[in-house]
Image (cartoon, rainbow, N blue to C red; front, side, top):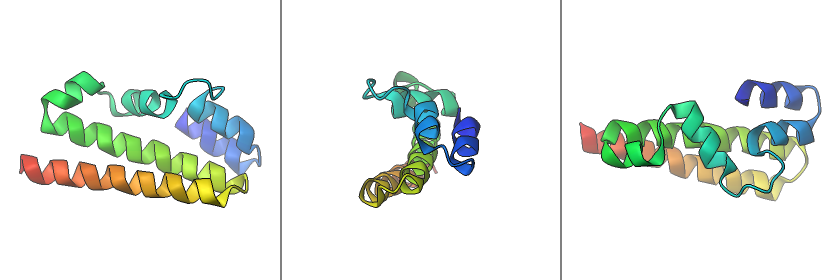
Length: 102
């Protein structure tokens, strides 16, 4: 779904790209669900291990970064900035989780 979103965005279809990432918008947890699929770890597993936390945080960062790019391509720069900052926060969480496991 991430690659499909990227391709749609490159073809100028931001709305379709966002649908690949977040579905129809009715699921408030769509980004987290996609991140769980992408990272291969669910929230329960992530809570039980530092490696799981790190993988999930990195996947959440990737999903939010993609959503930021799509949102910017659609012209909503304020929301794109917020998603980018959220992606950075997830990346920071992954880094901190890595330090805790070291």
